[in-house]
Image (cartoon, rainbow, N blue to C red; front, side, top):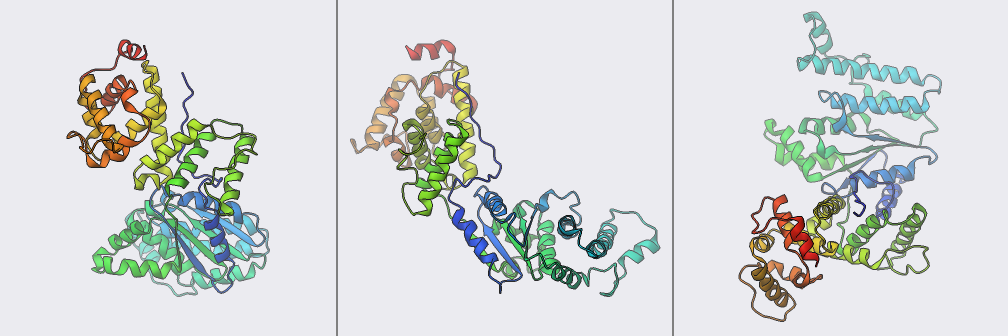
Length: 448
């Protein structure tokens, strides 16, 4: 039985998608002296590579002279009642850990943390999360002047002064990830922390999120005011000065990405590094296709992997092929389906499984049609279907959709493949009715 290869959903520190130009653009923006402070928004749908860009950016900036990089994930905060205080506290604690040896700095930061702590107490009491004597409640909620150490009113001025005194610090870069996973109130609290308290000279924020979802969260949070939808666009534009959208992955780039994913399991780490570097160099030089001129490398992907990657890249729907996460999910589903088929004695070429899975994943009922037919009428339909797809016949079979023409014309040829046992297996996995259940006997018979 073949080894099963699966891919995780974690962001990577290796650029497989040509994000280097995005990272370079963000770094160049951070170095513009008159954009201070600045908030950069990196927008893409879920699974579009935002977290990977942040990781690559962190890798690029980490250790750079005068730069300090902080990564925040507000949706992971333990205290969801006061996300604003959590964001501010995380930034202060990181500065303390990095520059705590500077004389007088711990006292200044502890003073700012005290302001945050009193604010958190007030928030918790107001929400009923803390039980207190009435005089304590009154004390915590009493409005205070800027000079009062228990007020956030003077926080921004003190924070700006603290950073000015850190002469060795040129840029504090705060990377905020997964903002679009937060509940609406948490989204608003994070944006408030950025705009009202932390956006001072030397500070830059990079927000990675699906901006449509963030706007919806702003609108939902402000809905009670009667100005949610009208206000959401302007509010986010006020926060983000430099919006940057990640490009969608085209078919060629998707094929490259899939080939690199497959290659990671097929060669040594040294050979894989050379392959990735080769792809990066060709991208930087504007050369296409990216995975070409591989003869000088000590290892190169075989024809089967390249063909499989190309088939997947062209077969996946536009929204799925443009998402690295969706590509990985499909590859994982393919690996699991292949392993299940092998464990049941079903011998079938991987490219056939891919073609049938893509058909199964399409919005029409073409896959269901194949599943429900007996062997002889299915063979007749496949011959007619593929001849129509390739333009050899003008009449489309009544049982299939117009949208299936491209699939019908593509390789591999299903008329010669023993797909019956696999279709029965697939039908059982997706709760479709099949005329024949898969069996080891039937599978063995199909291989003869």
